Image (cartoon, rainbow, N blue to C red; front, top):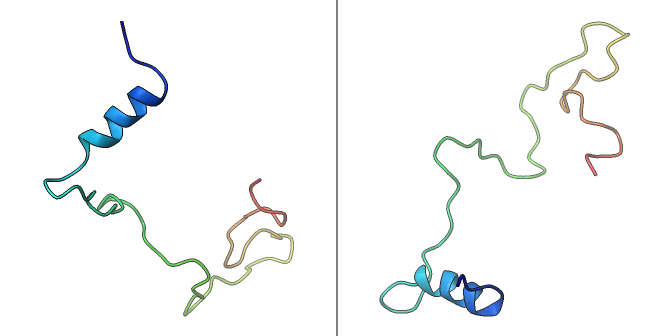
Length: 67
């Protein structure tokens, strides 16, 4: 029978431990885009037409966020 709950969690966490009991540090995949939060743009994209309200450095991100 498959293990569920705390015992399954402990076994999953325990399987990733190294020989000294430390987990390797997490790293983003090499194919991902890594940019620090809040870092400004050297040359931000500027609005081409006044009707394009979603152009600009945020490129169409909703004003209230994604939540």
